[in-house]
Each structure stands twice: as C-alpha cells, then as structure tokens.
Image (tube, rainbow, N blue to C red; front, side, top):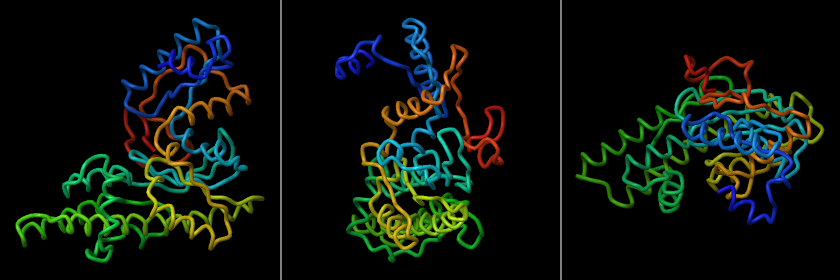
Length: 300
C-alpha cells in the first residue's frame, strides 16, 4: 500500500516531510499494525513520526476541505461515535455532548439487519426510505425531553424492532413497502434528534461570539442526504455557515489523517518511537467519561 501510494504520487520516501499514522481509537489489532508500520518507516528513513487521533481526523476535515477558521462547531457522527465538539484549535476540542449508548451509524446498521436490508446499513436505509412514509410508524425521539446535547439511539432501535415484530405477527413477514416505511420512520427519528440537539449545541457555541461562525458535520453518517439537508437548513436559519465534506471524505480515509499530521507538524508536535496504539482516546480528556470507562479508559 505504501509503495503504491508513493508510486501514484510520484514521490520517494526521502521526499516525505513526516509520517502521520492513526494511533487510536479503534480496534487494537488494526491500529497496532498501522503504528508499527509507521514506526518502521520512520526509523528506517529518519523521518519525523506523528501519531494522530482518528476522531481528530474527522473533526479537522473541514480545515482541509473548506479552510474553516477556529473555533467552529463540529457534529462528529459515525458508526462508532457521535458527539458535539467546539474545535478551538488543532489540539483543543471541547465536547458539549454525545451519545450515551449506540452511535447513529451503529443504529443504522442494526436496524438494517433487523428489517432485512444489506450492510452497510446507512446507505441501505437511506435508499429504502426514499419510497417510504416517515409517518407510518410512531417512533420515539429519545432524550428530547432532557436538557443538553446528549443523545441516545438504543431505545429507538428497540422501538423499530417492536414495530417490525408487530408487522410480522400481523401479516406473517415484511413486504418491501414495510421495509421502506420502517426505514423512513427510523431515519426521520434520527434526523429529528440530531437536528434538535444541534440547535442546542449551536446556542452554546454562539455564546463564544466567534468571528466566522460555522458548523460542520463529518463521519460516515454525514453522507446521509436527509440529515445533511436538515442541518443545512438549521444553519441557514441561525445565520451560520454550514460545511459537510465531500462524500468520499465522510467515511474513514487517509487524507484526513495526513491533514491532522500536517497541522501537528506545523506546530512542532512530533512523536518518538515510544508512540503506542490506543483502543480508546477521547478528544476532550477533561470531560467526564460518557462510554466505556474501565481498564481501556473512556471511549468518549
């Protein structure tokens, strides 16, 4: 892979200024493999090594694509994470809230499986929802009755399961239109929750009186057009710039890690060969743990 990337770019290893590598969070086997490969390249070539937080890659993508000025509000919404961050700098992230259980992308995958749609669940549900009725099933909007920016999607997944079971009990199975209606109802519920919680996060962010107020959304779920449209409409209503990366930069990619590496390199933030792979690595280490505190540390 490294050889192919160098060949495509027309560069050789001595031409490289620094080597950026995802050092976490994530499944430890894959993260460790990447870190060890990067260490070997750095040691062998004498090139500076920069460990990157995977979440920072998503959070700083708007700097790569749209040159956003600090501070901006970020909704990082993916298969494993969902949180609101005020991005103050390339190294300072303030968490305003996040999911207390399933991330939206995880919920999309699980619901798709429940109603017989292929994986990955996000694109499958979005496609099916286009021909469905979002009001066909009365699904909950969790935590909208609770102040703040925290979210929950586990109960919504369970409610969709019960709606599916009711249909199966009534008619002996699911028809394609049932899949479309369940998809549309579920997608509408997730969109409503994300939109309202974003509105609340914007209030806190705008209290900082930023010179160029902006909200960005990144992560795999940011590819969902219904969610993008609602967030864009909200931003326009609030008089705030809205940014969403191109679809190919929403899901995990090497460009976002390279960009964070560049931002850290400019600040002189270089790692040495003691860099370790981390399964968990919150961006805002000053915020209380929301998920998975234990031997491995807080997930978020």
